[in-house]
Each structure stands twice: as C-alpha cells, then as structure tokens.
Amino acid sequence: MSGVDEPSAAIDDSAALVAAIPYARYLDIRIETATGETGRIYRMPFRDALIGSPRLQALHGGTVASLLELAMQFEVLIAERQARLPYPVDFSIDYWRSAAASDCHCRCRLIRSGRRVAQVQAECWQDDPERPIAFARADFLLRTADGAEPSNDA
Amino acid sequence: MDETLDKRDPAVRAGIAARFNARIPYNQAIGLRVVDVSTDRIVTALAYREDFLGDPTAGLWHTAVGLSAADSTCGLAVFLALPGLESIATLDLRMDYLRPAVAGHDLRIEAECYHLTRCVGFVRATLHQGERERAVSLCTAAFMRTGQPMAVS
Image (cartoon, chains in turn cyan, green):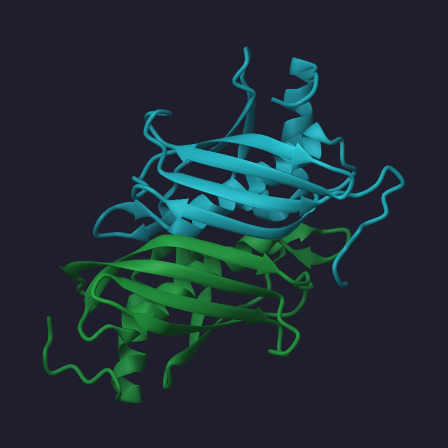
C-alpha cells in the first residue's frame, strides 16, 4: 500500500496524531498498524452515543462516514508525510449494509498521489472484512514540503 | 401510518421534526437542533464545540462534523417530504468542501428534498455559518424508502 513504516514508532505516532485532532479524539478513532501486507486499520469503538436508530440498534450513518473520512485523511497524512491534516476537496460514501451496534473497522487505498491532490478510497466493515458495510472515496489537497497550502479559499 | 397527518401544517411538521431528532442518540450527542421546518427547505444548527475541531491551530471545524449533521438533516428533509411516517435509510451521500468552517461560530444546515419517487428521496443541502452565499459545503444524497412505518411518538 503506502511507503515504509517503522512499526513501533508508527503506533506511537498514530496515537499522537489522533490526540491532535479533537473530532478524531471525540470519536475515539484508533489507528492500528497490522503486520503483513494489510496496512493500517482504523477502528471506531462502539458506544451508545454513536447510535442513529434505537429501534434497529444501528449506528448513525454520519459516524461511519466520519470514520471513513478521518481514516482516509490520516492515510494521506502518514503516507505523504504531511505536516498537517490534508484538507478534503470532496467526499462521497455508499452505504451497503446497515451498521450494527459494534466496532467499525476501515482500510484505505491511496489510489493516486500527485503534486497537489491525493485520491483515496476506503472500505468499512464490522465482523467480517468480506462483508463491507460502506465504501467511500475522497480527494485531498496536499501541502508542499515548506508547508504552503494550496487551499481553495480561506 | 397516520393517514390524517397533515405534513403541510407547520405545527405538525415542527412536532414530527422534534420527535424525529430527539430519538436519534448521535444527533443528541452532538447537539443538533431543529431550527425551522415550516417550509420545504428545512434548517438545523450545530453550536460550536472544541470537540468539533479538525485543525485546532488554525481554528477550523473538522469537515466530518458537518458531514454527520448533513446526513441527519437530509434524512429529516426526506422524512418530512414523505406522505406518511415511513422509515428511511441513507443510500449514498456526497460532500463538496468549498471552504473551512471557522471555530467559534455555529454551523447551519439547510436541506431540501427536491424529488421523491416510490422508492427513493433525493435531497441536497447547503452548510454555512450565517451567509448562505458563502457556503462552507454542499451536500447531495439519496435515501431509500423502506416501506416500514416509523414510530416518532
């Protein structure tokens, strides 16, 4: 998937990355560096506040979308060694199955990373990685090495 | 389903919206408020919280907070546009992030269900911080009608 990682350092850095982003901290996102070729897994632990439908005991779609957007953003941040979170241009999500009241896991695929824009996909699953519950894609603006932002409009 | 329900009546709409919002735990957790549902273009708001920041140094909201609020508000717009009290599910949703939302200011979400078929509700939303012409983000989404009644009382 992405470049070379130093596994133990990556885990420490990951916790610090999440801690630096209040909304990622609010959702309690965990970045878990799996060994082998699967790459990073982003996890959102279940809690009652994430429920969208009490009758169906289903997660709110916005929480799943938030996990996927944050995961793709962290993926670009780490893989492209960005100094700050890359700003998203756009995002879209397809909901394939309803999300049960349990943890969500997400894996990202950095499709293309150019000089200014990175294009990413993400998949979310709960119990079974072979039965994804949602798919998302997003584009992010990259910052140059000197930190300049190619922002649309401030 | 309640056949006598007049979803054109602003008081009825306000009552349905309040109950719809109150029974969604995540909307309650983030403090999403129903502001105005008297017309087809419904309005909700989210008060600023430090937990919502994506870039604390620059003082910017994380875009995914607006994304969550847009999902909820679009759902409410579709729900109010349906003839009865039918439960719905988000099929897909897209966000265009035009400019960042700045810390210290609330976020407003205005959503409109612009087309309804037997199975699907199509909806779009504008997110802004007071000036609709300076939108923070735009959202389009499609919701599936489940055919199942939804209890909102």
